[in-house]
Amino acid sequence: MNKSKSKKNKQTSSIWGGRFKNDSSQIMKSINASIWFDKRLASHDIMLSKEHSNMLYKQEIISYRENNKIQKGLNQIKKEIIEEKFHFSDELEDIHMHIEARLIELIGDAGKKLHTARSRNDQVATSFKMWVKDELDSVLILIKNLQESLIVQAELHIDTILPGFTHLQPAQPISLAHHLLAYVEMLGRDKTRIEDAKKRLNKCPLGAAALAGTSFPIDRFYTAKALGFDGPMENSIDAVSDRDFVLEVLSNASIIMVHLSRLAEEIVIWASPGFNFITLPDSFSTGSSIMPQKRNPDAAELIRGKTGRVSSAFYNVSTMLKGLPLAYSKDMQEDKEPFFDAIDNLKICLSVAEGLIKEMIFNVSSMKKMAELGYIIATDIADFLVKECNVPFRDAHSITGKVVKYAEKNNLTLDRITLDQYKKIDKRITGNILTVITLKNSLESRNSYGATAPIMVKKAIKKAKSRWLK
Image (cartoon, rainbow, N blue to C red):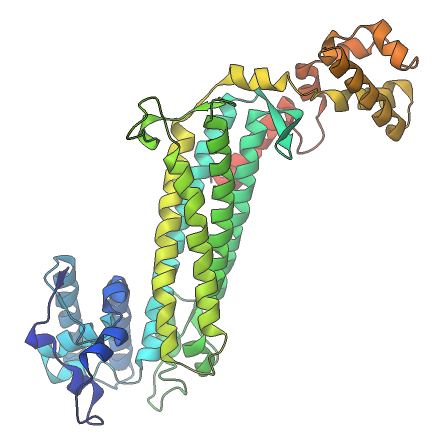
């Protein structure tokens, strides 16, 4: 879209009416203008204006001929914007004034009647909500795509063993599929939070006017339904001052980014030579300007880095709102730049994460090799002592600690300790222990609901498909 300071857009005094003798200073116009970021609301503002005009005609506030001219004029403006022939300027501060000024220029006095029974306060809030609803639909699709890529990889790695970590120390053997499904569940909660937020924001501010409503016989239920809302907002003051929907969506976006950042951190760690759990695809890696051997996980690092950017948007808007008296203040113009930036970055991070998961290669042998280190089947010995030898768990924990200490001292893995050596540690240990202490048995034995045994993971994959991909 072309930036212009064409004379035909200098409608400031006619828009403001006769209250002001002199024009605003140029520096005032610069700080006051939001057109360079809120022009993305154009299509929603045009849709809103068309339905507002239809309502004015239905209520016999404007004539059929006037409504017809308004509809045609708005269609022309939409075409100009799509074809990047529309002129934008600081002279008209926002997208709403740009569209109204251009409409008056195109159709004359009929265009001046469009703003009857509405204010920019309810107009801005409504078009913003409409934009947010559409963006949330896009975010939901992107989350679903990422969940699907995780589930596809999980199906390929039900029996793949890797060490599960606590404190970034090898803890217990788990299925790679089970690990990937943990992120599917996180993202599922993210989806439900967004769907919940959509329900709360789906009330229409239009018709609240500046703050007190209007004396014209408007039909707010008509415009709310026509614009896809469940109904009008109940209180006109709340309608123009409410930005809870901005805060709630930014809060949800921050949580999603935290989940993506945790995934990105694991990708960074897993791609390092010390782990070598994954090979990153060329399409989501970068090289070094000086070290030719490097394959850098920049895509994952950028996801991790952008998390603070999205989270700070919530802080930005909440700080702006916290001191505002009812109803509207110009401070509220500052809600859009951080919000737009947060949603843009959230969407690209979701897309990049999907691409990374879809195209990365899991190095199964490296995962298995690390799983053989760190005595990660020690808990299985303790469980065996409880179940097979009737040893209280705290005693079993202590005995197992002695087993690990013996293995460390003698440079042995747990499965290389003989039965005689076990019995020297505690005579209650039976020969069946030698069948327990394998990675495969450890994995398969954890078959409680939601656990890592392959039989349970298969059920979890089936359920995840039903819950999240339909």
